[in-house]
Amino acid sequence: MRTWTDERLEYMLGTLLRAGVVLAATVVLIGGGLYLARHGGEVPSYHVFQGEPADLRSVSGILAEASTLRGRGLIQFGLVLLIATPVARVVVSAAIFALERDRRYVGITLLVLGVLVYSLAVGYV
Picture (cartoon, helix red, strand yellow):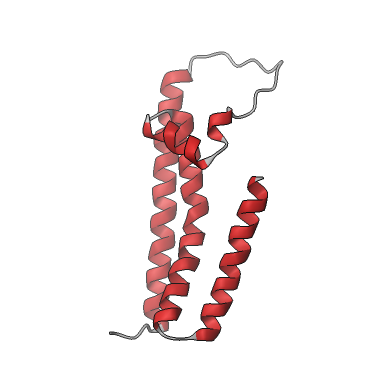
């Protein structure tokens, strides 16, 4: 097994972040285009506030809406991908540090992952 040099690790994590952001932006742009194509001519009513529909407030609802190629669902899915990108970076970092048997950095990375997951879970409730 090849060892992970700092440069190789930085390159791989940088590529992961770039790919995640580009993918998320592409999904949001496609969703925005579909939304405008279907609803661009509607006149908005600002007299009554209407928040996000209930089906777009959970990951399962977002996945269901995105799978039917609805604009709002794709936009929300792109935002979920954007949020998942740095989380994936932390998970990959922890895995690489575990492969290298670097306990200190595994512990620090898992602590960061715990904080990320906790903040996402508490913010979701």
